Image (tube, rainbow over the protein chains, first blue to last red):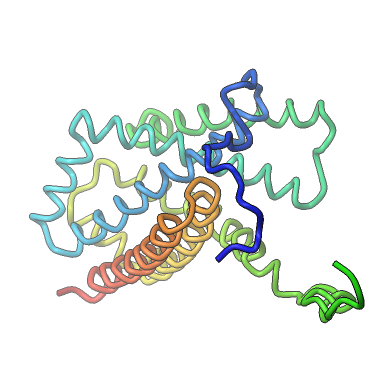
Length: 135
Length: 128
């Protein structure tokens, strides 16, 4: 079938061989942007389930509320909140890069640490607002 | 190899330049992201405001016409963005037949979830 000469079928290492690299802010945030995106896919399924629960009447709402306020439910919501703000802040950073801004090394690190701090701060603010601790 | 070579496929396209459709998905991912930023913040603010609300208050919020419109826009841009993002992840980490199967399943799943979310939003809006 193939017109190429036979080549070794031995498994070959695939780039980028991530285990050989020292973790850096740049690479860690790049991976986190994908990881949080995948986590938010699960949150999106949760959103549709929640909408169906409210649409199905008071009993559905009660079940959804019990699930969300249970300890595992609260933990998942907390993770989803942080994943959301991390992906949002990282996404805004990507849009700025797309516009050709912020490519200097100093700006890369400054922006990187900014979104790490902002994602934690915004997550905390949202939960404090939900608990009526901040207006 | 010797003698004049037959025309290669690339010879037909060599000077034609870009087909101009290659950036469509790239743009769609950014456009859906720009829509999602305000829409998702609206939704999270609503969740935070209604965290302690009862069923009637949730229903009243989601039945406001503006809420229904924003929720539908959120669902459309969310699942469009999700489809484009997960597609890149699958294309990068899966190979051969598994990749094709995963891509088909993921894209159908995203579309189905979007329709399910829109149906639930309409059901809340119109009552049942």
